Image 1 (spheres, chains in turn yellow, green):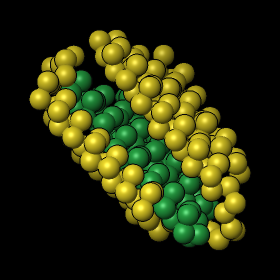
Image 2 (image 1 turned 120 degrees about the vertical axis):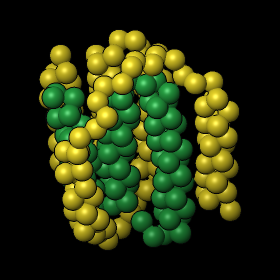
Image 3 (image 1 turned 180 degrees about the vertical axis):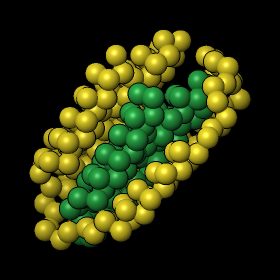
Image 4 (image 1 turned 90 degrees about the horizontal axis):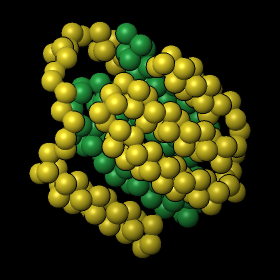
Length: 135
Length: 78
């Protein structure tokens, strides 16, 4: 079952890479978010609350991206050279081969302490974003 | 095994999207794909708290990146 999601994810990533249109890429990103949320659901059905959470959150985030992409459509043809940074990030992939701690116990409930902390982090980032974009 | 393949796929896909990006919006989209790899990795830990933290951090960071690109676009740098 996870293979289906993997193939779908490959297709969506290829679509993001191949398309020249920022809006199409952002829409592909939305569907990739839904695919990852579905993969979480397939992996752990106990996390079905997380499916809804991740889907909603990423649809909203990617729609914001669509708006920004539409707002900056008049960009010039100056290219961004990110290849060295991307290759450096790729160099970290072998770290995945390090042995992990193994499978822990399944915890299907959220620690309530996290809720105010997450709220404060989101509030902070929204305030910073508002000040960044409206000064 | 498939879980690890999916993780590597998301990471490599995001990095590839960043590598071929020709605008900052594309860099953000590639970074988002890599963030999804982070969320998937948190799901592999079988801990819903960690998954929630990964999702919240992903959103906060997306908001900040988008705001930064918006500011750059307004000042004519994009």
